[in-house]
Image (cartoon, rainbow, N blue to C red; front, side, top):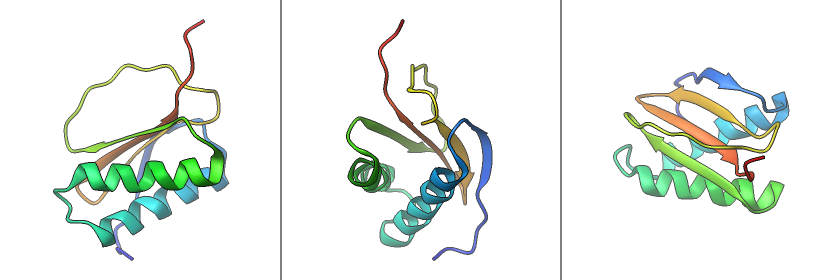
Length: 94
């Protein structure tokens, strides 16, 4: 596993889920080239879908903008190594 420490920028996830998100991100960075953001994101999404049910979204990269609606308790945005990670479970707008 990578020795880098993740820095959480914002989240509403339970702590256990936060730790799992960072663990899967670190695992993905060990499996894929740091420039292969699509494969890294796919790996994390698949792990979340398996453990917590379908509907998860994952965005990985160094520069991106976004606007989304998420299910309460399913959002995390953090940095690990040189990449930013946005993970959430989608929700419909009220």
